[in-house]
Image (cartoon, rainbow, N blue to C red; front, side, top):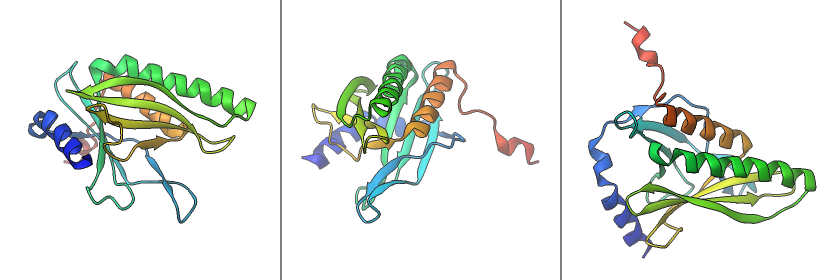
Length: 182
């Protein structure tokens, strides 16, 4: 069933494979829980942008542990940027409050459109009373276990907020650093 859902998502977003991606310079790192280390660790993460002005898409890819299906990826559209930013802001608010109150909980923040038939679910998740994560899951056909979720700590959530803000303003991919090498 999971494979069929992944196939449906790939077909729904197949138009994406015909567009060229531009790399985005960023410090964004997706985290994933490592059972051996018993902590959340950085995963190899890449960020690209593609599309026409006003219709750009930000794509975050990372390599999950034991990823037999390869990379996990998440697509953020400029047209849904306000929803993404509102959910990240809610995470920031809850993280500050939960740390202050020493609360530990997991709760859905909200959902926002990604691509045709696909949405992103934003959740707040406490690792402990001082470590809180923004968890983003890809949802298709009513199922939000399509691929590995993306875990972001406070610093990474702030970086994603910045990237989506730039996406909304048409400021990505940013400076072409290769242009100064002639």
